[in-house]
Length: 392
Image 1 (cartoon, rainbow, N blue to C red):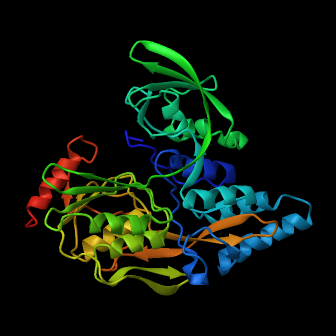
Image 2: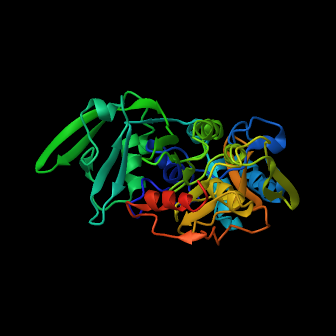
Image 3: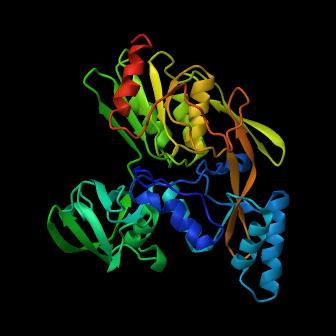
């Protein structure tokens, strides 16, 4: 985690673990998936919506394995997981029908939780970094800076943040809104226990704050549904001469179409990325009419991945932004969901995307124009200082 709030780890083949690890971060910041939307199948632009029947060689093989397992009276999900595991597809995942519905909710920016963000400190303690206004956590009096020591009696010191979030959400038991979770908390020398009732919440993936010099910091934590338009609205409200710091640190991806819409806020049409689906090349284009004059700096780190890397690469290649921070994660693969017999869904890699200049991202990431330590408290101020050199 390196102190970053809920950076989602790569998927695991086991379907339940995959959903927990990939979408646990929605408690704080939104979903992470790196899935290509279904625009290629003329469906809604949100990626997980209405998965199509299995296509491509890998999809057909997984579907066949699932069908054979059903004929033998076995679980099609388990058969699909075995087939996916044998394929060597690092980013593939298999979901039951209910898990896939949860995935769709996450991509729509909805989740069940208590409304707090957390990080693991160097010593292993879990610190609350943010409490959402009006959330169950806020109503219980929990504040940023409190330490979370236990969840339903289980000690959490030293555990990965994703596991702690899974406990808070009740992922292991599919706990719905209205169920309770008992927290052990500390504030200074005061220790106490608090029982909090989970609620249905929506994410806040885009936040804007204005610096003293007038520049806006637009923080985007994930590319869930509607984020692209939120970024465009934020840019419209920025004084044109002040500049924008686009903070993509810890953004583990989401809906590719939303990243393209966000790119359209800063570009006047043109290429955002190319990608291939089973060997067929396709292109993602920005809308015309974006702001091409406001100074722009993109701030990235090792937690910037997938759709966030696609956006970063486009802005860098098109000469629209100076990228500062550290090398990004390096996930440039394209997944598409395929419906399997029995209602489960396999998300399989069908190709890779490239930046406008033809750079591959998978395994290499995006190298910043200016390397700085993105974890330092002054990272945003360093990024803003770069705006001064862009003529604002």
